Length: 215
Image 1 (cartoon, rainbow, N blue to C red):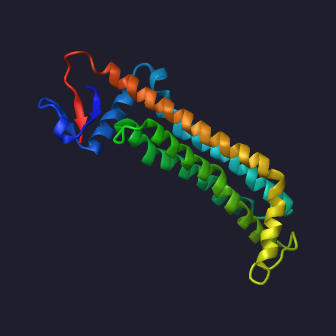
Image 2 (image 1 turned 180 degrees about the vertical axis):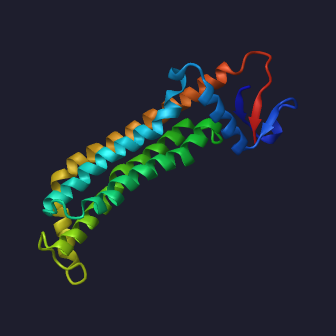
Image 3 (image 1 turned 60 degrees about the horizontal axis):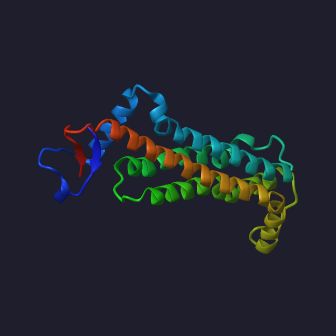
């Protein structure tokens, strides 16, 4: 039974009506039991791939600021949790919660819109978020452990910003590359997810067989 998203006025009388939640559960079971795994790999592995890409870019960014502020082993775990682990978790969660349902149900009828949204989410959590949080965390630990002489954020905010710009300069090109890579990777994999859903629905919709619709 193929899964189609239709307006209530367009639903055939013999269709099996499902809520969006029921439709997602139904399609998830189809994916789990699909015999040819090569047909459904994007729907299975994309969140994990995006989370891994986020880890790589976040580690690079966080390590750069820690090295510039001579932190060594000071606060290593405490800085990697919010600047590396959290972005990876959020990347995976947001893709599963806000992208996959749109890919499966296609309520907007605009796969390119979904791909663009997925790319922006990935770029934000994989690069933009660490670029803001990693230096803040590194500055805090550098002040606490006296590894680098920092201006006061309360009395000399401009000096702190200048220091941030000076330390960010050497990785600007790399950060831009990470941003572009994550953006394109997410759009590409989301497109593969769309293709996988299309193949599954096509295989489940032989001529003359009834359809399942979500409303």
